[in-house]
Amino acid sequence: MALLTDSLPTCYIAGRYEAGCDEAGRGCLAGPVYAAAVILPDDFHHPLLNDSKQLTEKRREILRPIIESNAVAWAVGIVSPQEIDNINILNASILAMHRALDGLQVVPGAIVVDGNRFKPYGDIPWETFVKGDGRFGNIAAASILAKTHRDQFMQQLHEEFPQYDWNINKGYPTKAHRKAIEQHGVTPHHRMSFRLIDPQLSLF
Image (cartoon, one colour):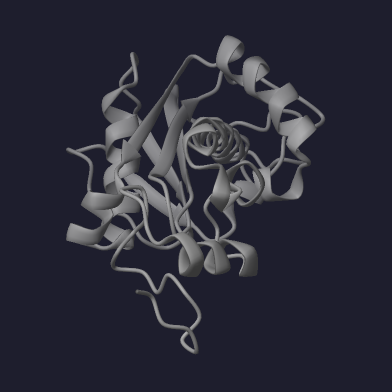
């Protein structure tokens, strides 16, 4: 399994393509949780490839088309705020990754996942890695696609609900976002099972 510092930063085991999975938006107050699954070719390398959280927005946007055009296969899975409220954010994050895997045009021989929680996907072997998005190329690529696709969606939602500044905070629990919820109430895109405002405030 190749590390990001290796010349071949993707994971490739015994001739089997390995899909990297990661999610974006788990800690947000609003919007879906997104996940991506990416299978990179065994000779893929890019000097900017890294955990999406370590990259600027500009670099993520540079890498997105490079990943999408060079990947053996990639797909994005989405779980809505209503589903998150029904099944909780951990299960929703795993479901989003399963949906991303469903969308792959190539069946992977193995799956590697960022974090420490996952559920079996068919009979495909899988393994989790804490901070895997900073260690393995295919997980890093998945983190970039999940993040950029979700950010694009939140930008679109901002056009409909500009008072929440989702173009800036992307639905995360900033002080300004919580204040906007206090002032304007909630939308269908807010996660009602989350603590939406500061505990000192009341939502009417």
